[in-house]
Length: 328
Length: 71
Image (cartoon, rainbow over all chains, first blue to last red; front, side, top):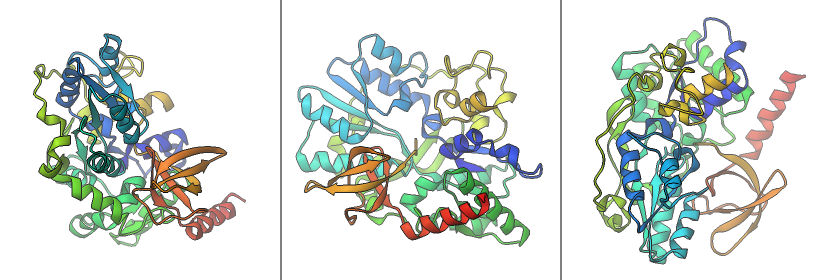
């Protein structure tokens, strides 16, 4: 299983599945932060965007994600002030330039992104920017991998571990998968030859009866990761239980802002959130867990398309459904 | 969302930011997460931040190995 959405896209774009022998099947996993963000969170940010004194800042990936009845894109068309930013630093700039407004950043992301969010909160604290807030729904990957294995729903023989998440967390955090579940793990780069080499390394481990954590992406990933980034994340965030769309609650898999930085936590704004409604028939959950492939969902390519997505896996360019749609 | 791209550090400023060249384009990025970099280092950029230094020895080694396969 490739856990990371960026790997999913690289595998499809480069036709890697077709290069592999029939006995090697790559299954796409839950590694797209856009796809696993719960509908209620989207509804919450939409409710905030409807308040006149708020500006919502977000990475572009989130703008089309369907909530229960709307999207940020529709709210923007209706007049809400919603701005796409490339970086949390741009969101801070919006806060500096709009001191009479409350600027909320959508804190979506895995370990690659959460240090940049932590860094923006520390910077806001340092510069005393008191109109910058984050609605955090940051997530950590290893507990989700454990949850997939514990579910017993799928048979995984090896993990292609995420390259850029591992640039931050290192490779050691996957040791429990090799030790407790006897499943080989290889941290992979994103070039086609990186991925082929990773598949080879996994197959070699299986053939030799080994279950270890190896790094193929050595030019970027060190066993210890990026200690400074990890320190910033642990300074700002605490680990909490977290809801993953399509998977459910995973213990200790989410990041919430620590009390010390509560002034930057957008959860203190109480807004009325609509009742959560999932689109009937959407099977994103099973796609995210690797239980089905997108073509097994009756909505796929019929009423769920990249132009009019019903589920999050079709919205995100790194979603499994979007990759199947575009490249299959 | 975890997309990241490599670039070369051209200039470092006092406010912990740097000019990074990515295929001929120069972008500013924060060095908050890897303050130890020096001009000339290759770094991995994600969402306006340099998140890791690229190990040039490892990079060259693997690219040479690939060239061997492609040839």
